[in-house]
View 1 (tube, rainbow, N blue to C red):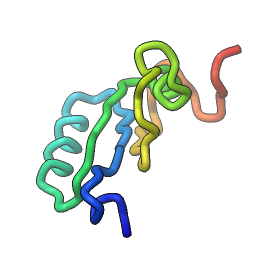
View 2 (tube, rainbow, N blue to C red):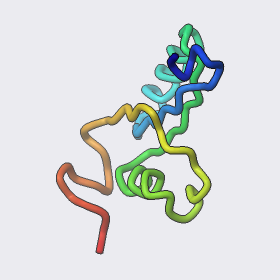
View 3 (cartoon, helix red, strand yellow):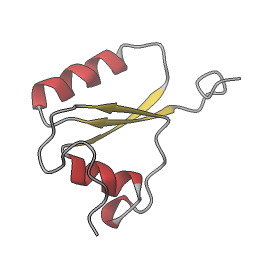
Length: 83
C-alpha cells in the first residue's frame, strides 16, 4: 500500500529559485490526485541543510521525492556539504 493510499501525504522537496516555477509546481500539485506536502527551498545550500536536517530544518520530514532545478545559485553539481 502506498503512502497516498494510506492517507499519508507524499513528502516532496522542491529546490527551485524561480518564483514562477515554484508557483507552477504548487498549482500542479494542488490539482493532482496525489496527497502531498510540498516543501520549497530556493538554493543548493538550503537544500543540503533540509536534507541533512540542519538549523531551521532540524525537525523536517525526509522527502519521498526531490524535484531539483539543475541550475541553482550557491551550489554547483557535484559539490558536497561544505566542510
